[in-house]
Image 1: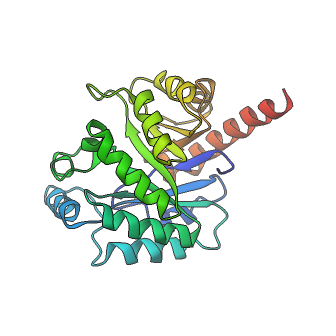
Image 2: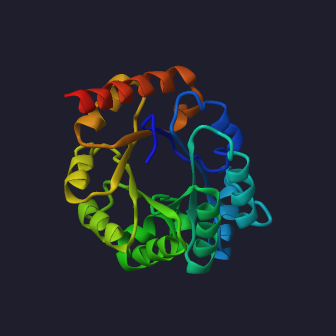
Length: 248
């Protein structure tokens, strides 16, 4: 899906095209966003900013997705956009933009903020696999490559089963925040043919290599995504690991 097999993970209100361009030497993919697409999630985002959370709240979120992806049109990386929605229409429109821009649409089933979950988005979708599958199918039918961002350690949610469900619905990748349950990456990799991106605690060679040993196809970096030293170490680990895979 991309090389080097290092991605920048979305950071709400911070992960825009300028953020991605600053470190293109070190990564193969950048997940911009997340951004709230429909009125329910936009209202949730407004409530979140009231308690000092950072959020993108442009007047027209679909136009914002298009403009930001356009700003990366000549960048040497795979662009992607993390989106949150409780309804299908905005997902379809965002997917069409991603299709036309050659970008990946990432559906957010990860955000655990109470306001976003109450709106029917984020982590709520982990507990409603039918609704999540409908979003995946809508985006895939619109012609976009689809990733789903998920979180481990959610009570009652078996991520390998969920991964199979989203794969059947048309997803191409699953972006796994492993929390403190790193072996779940292996369980998901064994259960599906999805491109598995592992996230959480990636800070250098050792943490990246641990995820690759569990079968991750790539890793993503969150908070240190603006630290070239961290990104260079992770990139070297990824390049070393996959060069051994080719020659081994």
